[in-house]
Amino acid sequence: MSQLDIPLDQKIKAVYLFIVLHTMQIGVGIAGYPQLVFMEAGRDSWMSIIVAAIVLHLTIACIVFILNTHKDTDLHGILTSWFGSFIGKLITLVFIVYFFIMFLSVILNYIEFVQVFIFPQMSSWFISAALLTLVLYAVLGGIRVAVGASIVFFFGSIWMLGLLTEPIALLDYDGYFPMFEADMRAILEGAKITSFTILGFELLWFLYPYIHDKSKVHRYSQLAMAFTIAMITVITMVSIGFYAQGQLESKIWPLLSMMKIISFPMFERFDILAVALWMIIILPNLILLAWMLSISSKRVFGWKQKYFLYLFVLIAFICQYHFDNRHYVNMFTDYVGQAGMYLGFLFPFLLLPFAIYKRVKGKKKANAKN
Image 1 (cartoon, rainbow, N blue to C red):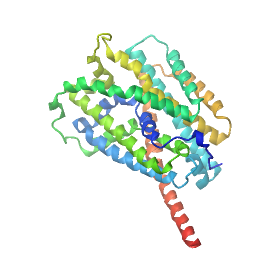
Image 2: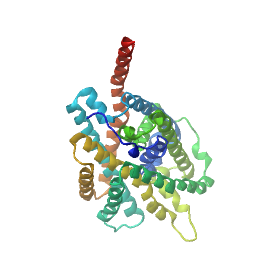
Image 3: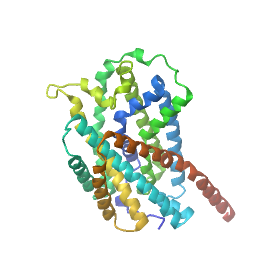
């Protein structure tokens, strides 16, 4: 039950982790992140990002260390091996609930994007139905299709970073000074906000058995984290320099608001087009989360993966009806972030002593045989 025998034709190369983990982290949260971190740390937001980056890289190193103690299994298999079937299933169920609320949070935030920027009267059920149909199609194709879709959408959206060149040309560099005004509490609060934004790396817990060349997992996972940190640093610093004093705090989605200044002959309002294009940014999030939900549920209950996929998609479609204003969406998103702090960042370090013990015990047995 704990070990997984993954056929070779279902495995992927570790290099794809760079794209897959990064796309899991960059989604709806990045559009509003600069305002949130600025409200906590002000001009010293870059310091909060550095603190969060250090914690993030240490967490990834911890996760890979734990996974390497069992070369051919995922988080559920490790938990079952260490703590028994009941506790292993119980903790995995907690992660299933966490992945589902993250999945629902992405849908709710994107629905709000569309209704605020493009079609205020468009029904939320229509938007969610369109997204969920695409998710179903991708996940039913298997892990290689899910990963492939993430790669395609990554290259289909990464060019949008080039759109920052126009806001960069209008930066007011006086907005970055004076620095070092924020106290340690403010910097740590900003780091906490940053941690909410960069969640998604938990995918590694369940994707690891599907990696063909596991010796390279750590390298590409860390590179993905570095790229994510670099991206949010650039977006945050551009936002701080672009908006005048006091403006950034009032912008709910600073990144999308910046795009209002961009125009093309065929598009008078590029920010409206950007919201539409944002769908190819959040789709990898939804596809990979749906895959994690269905595969981890299969591991716990033993039913076919597609049945769980249908179930979670149906539940998500029903649940989105109960979030009809921004206040509820914000509260729900905050709860997701709070859960991610514990399950994403704290949980790996709680497991670390058990992994160290297992390795030490294994070395003692090996030495005893020799």
